[in-house]
Image 1: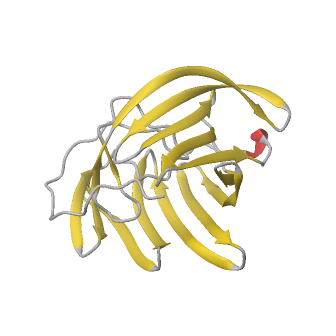
Image 2: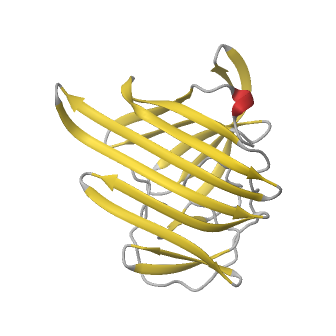
Image 3: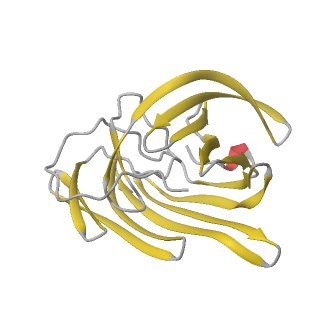
Length: 218
């Protein structure tokens, strides 16, 4: 399910658009389906207050044929936020039997991201591909949370749609992020992540929020 550009050598620091830091703690849990069939789950937990937050994301996706697992994806990532900026990152991904790790640390006015044997320097407004925070439409790159590489993207607002979440009708903005893959993301009026959909390897992947919307971080 990777949405990634290839890793490359050290890139000079570049300014990134300002992004919104967490403002409230909370928890999101999504059931994930592949072509309408159960595929796993994705959980985001935000903890903290007073401008200092930690964000833990965990995805566990599997495709089976009978007792045989034919695809396995595990991703765990912890973000550290200080004020309105991402200050640190530690991610581990198991995909198709291969383990990758990404770390990031703040050095002066840059965020130094290490992964796949390379270091890349990002501006302090950089966002990782954890999706729980709404990407602004002027964003042109993100931190690939699987490789640590700079991922060129474009972001567009598709429009406002009505989603059914736990029997409740919720108005949400549909955002389309085009990178190596195209990902559609939904965020409610408070900026809470409420949906996701994309296609990979000819498979349609959909996220359905199962936790109460009131419990979601903003």
